[in-house]
Length: 295
Image (cartoon, rainbow, N blue to C red; front, top):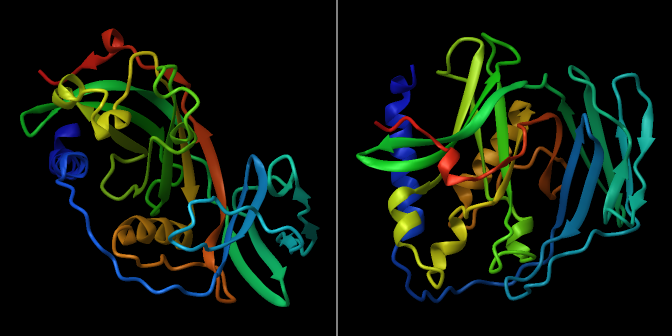
């Protein structure tokens, strides 16, 4: 059945290799400073509610923006009850133990400096993960390390959208404790259109065998490669359509400066998502344990 998706794998492999092996040259960019915009990243899920409110920063400013304290943040549920989301200093965002329920809609309201920003999102059903693990796959006559995940389609016959995130924790001396460890190792979006009935799968391309053998520690791409003993954690989020389109356009717009279409009204950047989150069992990458289906 996987052969049906060979073209998709081939395209992903080409993009993957191109991204890691592209030539680099110094480019001078002429850009104009613009006034900071409010940025809201809000989420209601089965894990609780978190809302981060920041402002965009200058391209020359490398300091990460801190959450703005003093905003009035509320989330209203289907029954009309409004929940105040207070700022949590330990999490550095507005946070609450308001847990989302699939099928329910939630309305976010953020008032800051006299401006009101609002959005509504409906929480889809979760996708229960069945299996996950590393495989060697042959794509375009080259072997790739793939982290393959199979899950139950929460609503067969209905279009469903997903976002995945792979987090890596490495004990390698060069990587341990670095800021890059707090960023997603891999992330992306996909939908269930064209998947086997009742199931969804996600193959995350990690690295090619050739690159894993030939890339040296002083090469720029070395940090993108998995190292022996790295711990992998995969999370799968079921999204409603507007939030899926936000993340999809976010990926498509990287490199050309285009802002993704926000589902929040009021003239700000960002998104508000009511989503269901599931996880695959945490695994440790051991080259000797990888299943080889490339032959």
